Image (cartoon, rainbow, N blue to C red; front, side, top):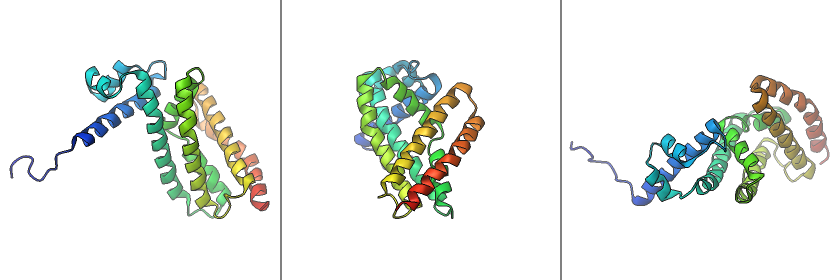
Length: 208
C-alpha cells in the first residue's frame, strides 16, 4: 500500500490548534520548571520544539502565551476534577469522599503552574483579570462534582461555604509545601485540618 494511503490530512485549523496546544503545554511545563519569572518565549519555543518564528506567529508575546495558558490550565484542571470524581463515587462516607476529592484534584504540575500564575497576578493587571475570569469556572466544576458525591445537598449554603473553606485551607497548605518541599508533611497537615473540616461538613449536612 502506498505511503499515506488511508490517512486523512489535517486541515489548517487542526494544524493551528495542535501547534497552539503544543505551545501552551510548553508554557505550563516552563512555569513548573522555571517559575513565572523564568518563563520566557525562547524557553517555551525550545521546550515545544518549534522555531521562534512559529511561536511568534501564534503568540506574539509572553503575555499572550501566559494569558492563553491560564484558560488552557483551567480546562485541564476541570478535566482532572471530572476524572477524580469518577474514582470516588463508590465511597460510603460522603464527607471523607469530598475531602479526598479536594486533595486529589489539587495535586500535580497543573496546580504548581496555576499558583505561579496566581502569584504573578498580584502585580500584573492583565493576568489578574484572566485569573479572575477562569477561576470561578474551575471552582464551579469542583462544586458540581461534589454535588454527585453528596446528592441533593449543593443547594445548602452552609455546605457550599464548607467546600470553599476547605479549598482555601488546602491551597494554603500546598503553598507552604512549596517552601519545605515535603508533600508527606503537606498531607499530614491536610489530614489534621480534615478533623475540624469534618465537623463543619457534618454540621452543614445536618442543617438542611
